[in-house]
Each structure stands twice: as structure tokens, then as C-alpha cells.
Image (cartoon, rainbow, N blue to C red; front, side):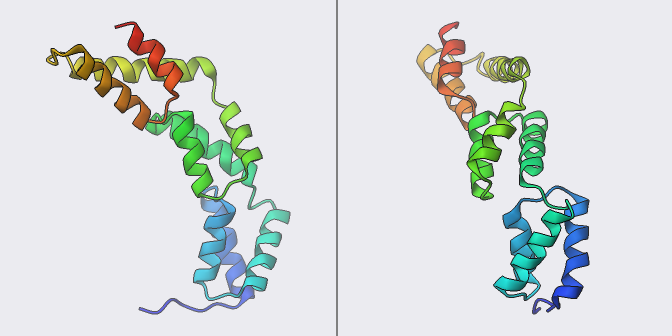
Amino acid sequence: MKPEKFTPQQALPKAKYYCAYQERSHSEVRDKLYGFGLNKTEVETIITTLIEDNYLNEERFAIQYAGGHFRTKQWGRMKIRQALKQKQVSDYCIKKALKQINDADYRNTLQKLFDAKLKTLKSEKNIFIKKRKLQDHLLLKGFEMDLIATLIASI
């Protein structure tokens, strides 16, 4: 099925609805508009309009994305930073979003993940394998190596 072509006048309300439904990054909206068959000039004009009308705000998107993925998926700062970079969010907005994550909550979440993984490794007799599995699990979740090393040293 061929994607439908829209004029800029038809695409603008659709883009507004797309942004109002959920916070979006600039790159997500840009991709959506290109999917409507618009050219670069038309896309940039609509993006500018969305920013001026406050439908699109990269900083607000980054803060919501970071907070949401930390709370719901229990991602660490490293994984959140990488995901925001993939969405082409500016370094300034990424730093601002990561600062919004409360340090105490962050450490508590890391501790909970650590404890939960440790329970699943009760039957593992080799301490080195146990530590490696714990480390790999927490790194995969996006937590910093120095925080992980501190927890693993306590075993």
C-alpha cells in the first residue's frame, strides 16, 4: 500500500494531533511528515509552526522520556542517554533530562534490581560467575559501572 500524500495544509492538523497525543522528538515528527510525502521546506515550516505553538518541545520530550523510562522500565542513565541520542535529542536536553532523575530513587532502583537478580542466582555456586551475571544484568539496564562495582563488592 502506497503512503498517502498530503498538502502542508492537510498535514499540519495531523501533526498537531500526533504531537498532542504524546510528547514527540523532533526526529519522530520529521519522519512522520516525510511519510506524508512532504518536501524538506514544507517539513521544516511545519516543525517551526509546531514549536511556536508549543506542540513540539525537545526539552519537555527529553524530560518526560527519561522520567518515564526510568520509572516504568527501570532503565539507568546510560541507557536513557543512548536512547535519546538515537532520537537525535540535543546534548543540552539530554543532560537536563537526566538531572531530573532523583539520585535517591535512582540508587534505590539499582538496589532493587540488584537484590532481585541476586535472588535468581541463589543456586549459582561460583562467586565469579554470580558477580559477572549481576554486573552484566545491571549494565544491560544502563546503570553506571562504578555504582554496580560498589554493590558487587558488598557480596
